[in-house]
Image 1 (cartoon, rainbow, N blue to C red):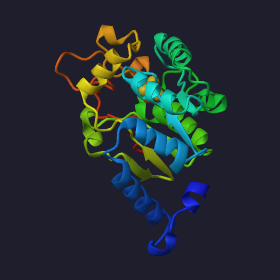
Image 2: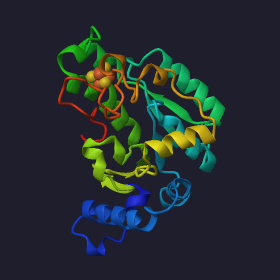
Image 3: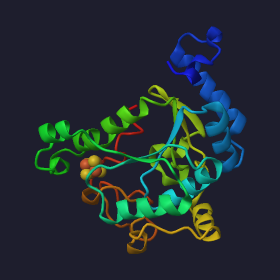
Image 4: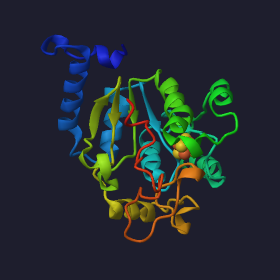
Length: 246
Ligand code: SF4
């Protein structure tokens, strides 16, 4: 159990899990109406100091949260899951954006070479079983990386739809707290922030990619389609599992 979890008042809860849920609800009530910068400051510098990381795909909208975090703590650990299936443009954008924002602790999280060899030797598991591929290339690597932390920061937003429409600002899921500082931002808020701070966009955005993941599973979206509708197009799958399997 991490220091953050130990800090709870366990007296009113039936279990550590319930205590964590109560603590997340209390944090949500306290901070949910604050500005994103203040939420990040509270999470990084007070509530989970030294025990929190930001997870970023360096995708279509990622620059906003990364820019906000860089103002609060440029040395906050930023975890980028390098699945081995990214578009060629993504790692280049990841390096350029991290450098321009002054982020000093971006870490590339990779799947296990042994597990890749055993479970996806030809690199085509995504053709047969996207859930298994995401588990191998995203969920397990992130699980390993997050063992060092009590909490992580995500860039999820309610307007992305699906299971995200009811997301709170603070939550507890699996065995981690999750902080969603821009969860209530809408598309206009994102665009306005990009323009105000002259943030560079992922090069695939201008080609119609509204949400950017691995190349085999990401397609452009038409005007009016949901932001994430180009992910796993044609499948019922809407999430890779890093948020739903924990
Ligand atoms: S998004 Fe596609 S290629 Fe990437 S890990 Fe998931 S199934 Fe595999």
